[in-house]
Length: 89
Image 1 (cartoon, one colour):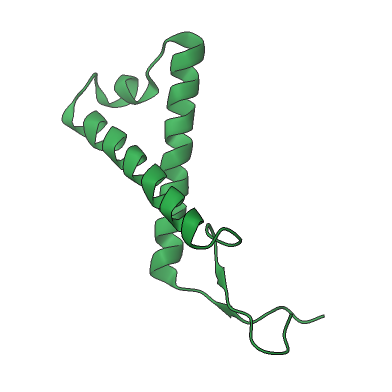
Image 2 (cartoon, rainbow, N blue to C red):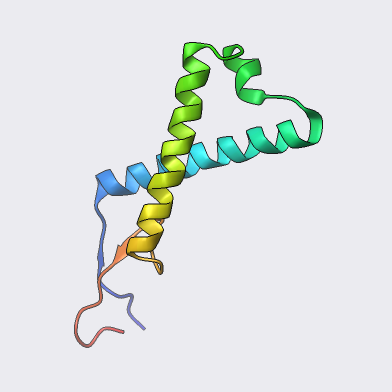
């Protein structure tokens, strides 16, 4: 059975991966903080340094971006956009 025709926008694909990685970093950070009271981002970049604050902001923006993308197309929002043509299901 052939695969459906796919349309892959590399810039959106890259932004999805970046958002996913940042959300995973945020998840690990909250997990470590909740379990061990250890702030991983602060340990790497310094407590509330400019770089740490940028990482926190990027993680938050990634969560908003991923949520918005999921609301647009809940079936295929993270990795590729699949576009079905007539006759290919």
